[in-house]
Image (cartoon, rainbow, N blue to C red; front, top):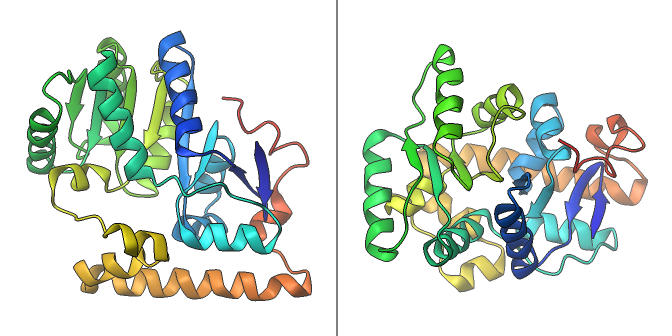
Length: 262
C-alpha cells in the first residue's frame, strides 16, 4: 500500500513483500526502481527538485530510517517495519546467488569495489556478477557505460554513488537502462567491502544508527547529521500547527498515484 507522507510517497511494505516485488520484476523482465527514504534524504529533497523527482517517480519508496517511521506514526501512518536499503541489497544478492540472477555493481572506488567483489565471492560462491564499474567516470563516458550495462544482461543494478550524483545519473539515463531492477545504495558498496560497519541490531532497533555512523566518521558526518536531524525535528514540531514542508505544496494532485510510472 502506498501512502502520502508530507508530499512524499511511502510504500508500506515489509522486507518480504519488497523482496517479492523485486523477484517478480526480475523473473518477468519487468521494470522496477527502488529508492530508500531516510531523514537526510527527506530534508534534502525539500530544496532539491531533482532529488524530489527521483523519489516521487520511483516504483517503490522504502522506509529506511527510524525518524521517518516516527514522523509517519505522528500522522497516523502505520509503517509495518523498517526496510533498510543495505539490508535489502544484501538480501537480493543472497537471492541472486541461489536463483541465478546476475547483478551489476556501479560505484565506489576501484579498490573498494574490488574488495566488495572479493567478499561477495567468499560469502556467495555461486553468485555471478553481470559486471562492475567504479563510480569515477566522466559525463561523456555515461552513454557508453549505459550501453555496457545493458549489454551485460544484468538482472539488477546497484548504484553506489552519493546524492545528488546518483539522481542526476538516473535522471539522464533512466529510460535507457534496460535492467529489471534498479536500486540506489549510497555507501552500500563500502559496507559490502567492510569499509563501513553496520550498527549492532539493538542500535538499529533503537533508531540510533545515525549516531553509530557519526562515531565511525565524526569529522565527515557530524555536521551533516546535526543539520538534517535538526531540520527534520523542526518539520515535525510544526505539524500540530498545520504547517507542511515545501514538498507537500509542490506535489501535483495525482503525483503520488502516478509515481510508479517510469
